Image (tube, rainbow, N blue to C red):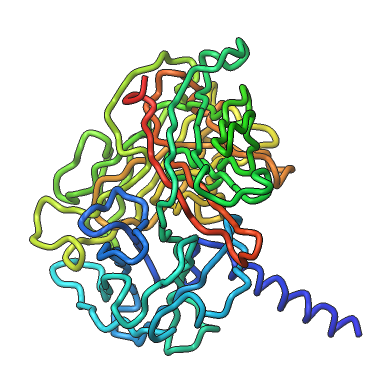
Length: 422
């Protein structure tokens, strides 16, 4: 009986692990990107019943062609599976094969690059909401390669939002407050607190997302969300950067490159703590990265790979007791996971992490999280500090469920910037 119970626990854990969005499950899969067509620095969101397209790119470092398939799964606002059959939200085939691929050329690291445009005319979402893209091997859904979030919008209502400085003196110089008005007068709202759901992302991160906030005022179903601490984000500071577009030329952030190693070994200059530094503005892409090169025609299948060594130097070279340190940004999927966790080198008094990255221009930051509290949100208080002036992007999603509805519809979306709305 004990063996059976343990086996069931393993099965449940595996099933739950595969429910996590934006995860790569096969170690040979690298550089997964899903974005609006021709715009690498964009959320994968399309309008319902439109001609909008998304680009999917990824590499298989095993270096030989395989049969990958994909499917969509409709989810609720909290990314739990919707209580609907795929026949209810997909027009056409439920599974599609990825047929467009190309072997790498020029690059020292051998890989197969896969790409496609979504949705295909034979596999189209018919409902708005959150979707999970699932890519798996040999048409076997048990061989999951990776999952990626994307969104289908049915813009039924108007949404106004702005970034403000909080009146709370404790957070006045360190945080940014989001205030929004949702005009839901055209909807059949009987219980706005339960039927309308708000999600706010800072710089496209889900690890510190704010959800389930309640309106302070309801004037004929025009909902005002302006609580002083309901949508309050630590501002952080501008992202750090690494120009990896060339492995021959050492950009300003590269300390050294070992071109004799396969893959190349790239050592970045150590990143010091910025807690004691004043705010300095520098234009960045808020955590995105751009696959590009300066010495080849097409970076998607000619870009090379390198083991990139990150070093963070904490204040006074001291270990952060009870805290884990992570490299954060699109380069780690903005995930708080072992793939992003840094290791403290006691002899050097620094945190270190090595990531296998493709040539491109990368933006990243360092965050800490309470090692003993899984529910705690990560922040940059110990690594960068916070400054109200920091330029941040905020993405606001408004979901709605009718009284007879079986899933959360995405009825409004907007991205605002903390500098443009002042």
